[in-house]
Image (cartoon, rainbow, N blue to C red; front, side, top):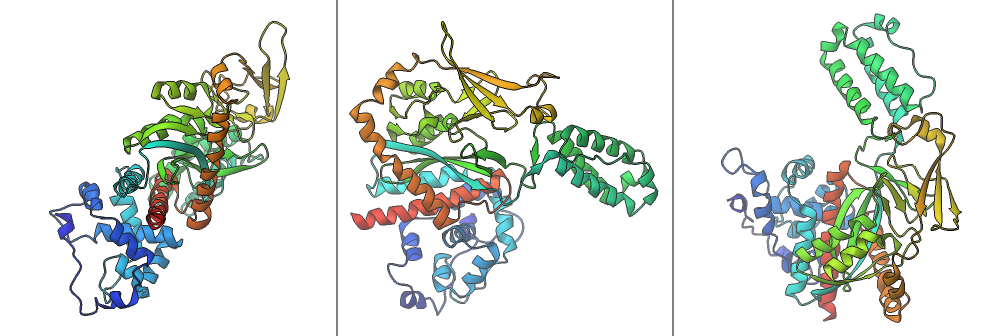
Length: 482
């Protein structure tokens, strides 16, 4: 068995832990609070149990990741500190004289051992089980929902800029073997922001290289393959980055971010009971069902959900009736967060619609009709539409403007409108501030304002370990208050 591959060695210095590490030390308390042996079972399929040398203890590797989140350390710094910090060594189940791992092992552990497991839901569920075991959480739950954003570690650039940069890399690679190709290559684009022009240039460049002998040189092949992938990707997006999963989201009409969103649900006890990590452009309200179902899977019965106007869409009102919980969310004038027929989504922070390519509307008008419901008309930047890779079926060639019309169905949500005017609604809504405080804790105390790795998978691992640590700390505080 995997757990038998490594065990804590007997050491004549083990008594030092009792002398140096206080009983109320946070790491000591966590070790005593939770049995980490569940890590063995979850990761067993990602290890070979019959061949090769013994693996580094997976529990120890997992605990290294927790220390990174708790103390906001890099791989190199967390390993370095574990050389001399006795509380770290105790938490890692090491003898005082044990040597530490190589920092590169943490990267391999994340990429190879944590793949194909739903670590985020697993760790949240373990903390909820722990809270229920200690009678710290009411299983008839009130959920408070919201989304918090994390910036990517990489900046975004226009797709045209990115294509031109990697086309340059292809040319440079070929010049090392055949400088005469300069005369055969197409003329470089003058406007690096024009995606259409840049894509045409790259396609011609690829066509030239594939006719030459240099195409068989590994260094050139590598650059060529990467450029081909980018050309394909640019058919679906107008922005690119070294972090390919990150997207632009909007916090208000004037402010945006490039990165990810973590959709959260917390209980009255301020424990995070469900979470979902997505790219930054995703609408908050469309993930309510996921959060409710994950909370139920963790063993809770959802009776009330508190959220801002992003959660008052028609689908969520139907969900509330289906699941028989009260939805405490003020109606938005739009009444629905998504135009399913077009792919346009409403961003409640910016109070504007966002097109499928991620561009925010620039203006909004109200249009009143005598015999019909009033309408909102959203205007988009036509210059962006002209070069958008998703313009087919959305932008009409030669059009001077691009607008989206949304009907204001003032009579469709009377029940919710009546509910939000009651004293019960107002009383329940007062508790929504708690999730804002939790978001602040994640960002300011645990570094969740910025992604530490690239890609959605890396963000999910960061989210899983950060929420696990945050919940454990909250559980310890609740135990102290009993």
